[in-house]
Length: 414
Ligand SMILES: Cc1cc2nc3c(=O)[nH]c(=O)nc-3n(C[C@H](O)[C@H](O)[C@H](O)COP(=O)(O)OP(=O)(O)OC[C@H]3O[C@@H](n4cnc5c(N)ncnc54)[C@H](O)[C@@H]3O)c2cc1C
Image (tube, rainbow, N blue to C red; front, side, top):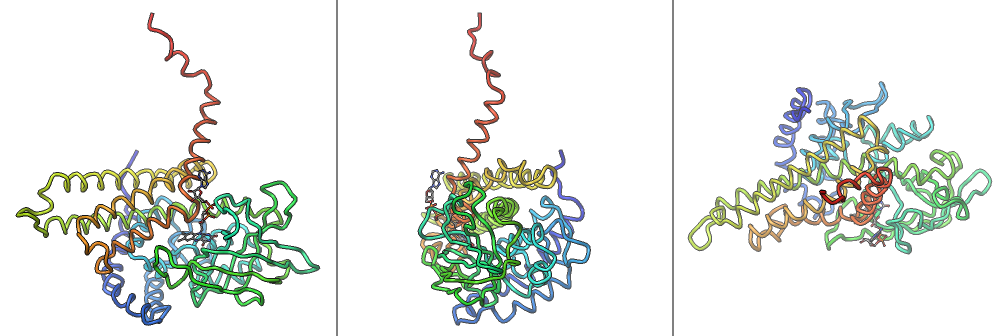
């Protein structure tokens, strides 16, 4: 077992860190000022994207690119430490065309779209020219269980007609969001996991209505986690992805690598919170001693480091499994990291906030944003409980297969 990053990954980490230090970190303040002034996308985003692309820091997330598609071919294991670096700044991933949910949508199109669909949507997404959203969750049904969704996709001659309401749709308020991938029911009477289909819906199709950008913990993201109404939205049947009834299966395929990406970014955010806490503890004196000199602060630092390292190793193992045995065989690991990492991030950020005093709750540090992301991640791509349940089920099933294997351990010693 080798825990070292390969020379290639080390070189990319350095290149990415340099890029972050030179071009992104110095613009964090400007990003906030422009967004607050209603300038979105921010004025420098196009230039930074062009620069990142010219440096080869582009589409790092997609391992299975075709030869003629722009990007760096990396495995999930190689990409994981890079996602961690980008994750420290909320908007940085977009500079490298590695931001959710576009990455998941590109992977979906890469795996399942027809040649014509790829030409129309995957090519501009890979080039970073447009943005997209994935619309599954609905206000009226518990969407933790995707088989509950109610949006209807009804065939009418050469068209599908969509009716439904979606919410928390990330990216839907982005001015450049041109595509919705909508999950709905094409066969409400069918077998539970074959009722769903996915359809490509150009955002400007009549009947698509953007109702509101929903604040999360009272924080409004400019790209939006938005509510949408779909009223008699008509699209040609050629806009179906895969076959009718494939929606549930494709949603599972889409979410595996996407969850790893979220987790790696979350580790980057936890790492940033710990670095901020470490410096604060060595600068701030209370009751005559530096915070770092108090044993309980030392414990919090140590607990945070231990938690981050544990989480990182499990995420790297999960990435390695996706690369070697596939997302399906890595289902238990994917569920484990999704249940573990956002909670770890929230705990580490919470400790850092406490070390900063009241300042830790203000926009003068990134901690409030890091906490908001961590808390939201405990829902996005499925709440903790769903992932914990998956792990428990897999453990119980494996135990069934080994049934009786522990009997000898229960026998009395004589
Ligand atoms: C910031 C953010 C961004 C998001 N982006 C998107 C997006 O781009 N596209 C999209 O379609 N959706 C998105 N979502 C929605 C997210 O996927 C859903 O909120 C999530 O799947 C849970 O569905 P729900 O909110 O309907 O909760 P419900 O299904 O109503 O569940 C409520 C609660 O029940 C509990 N619960 C659920 N299942 C179990 C169980 N098996 N055992 C025990 N308890 C359980 C959990 O505590 C859960 O929080 C986003 C959410 C957030 C917060």
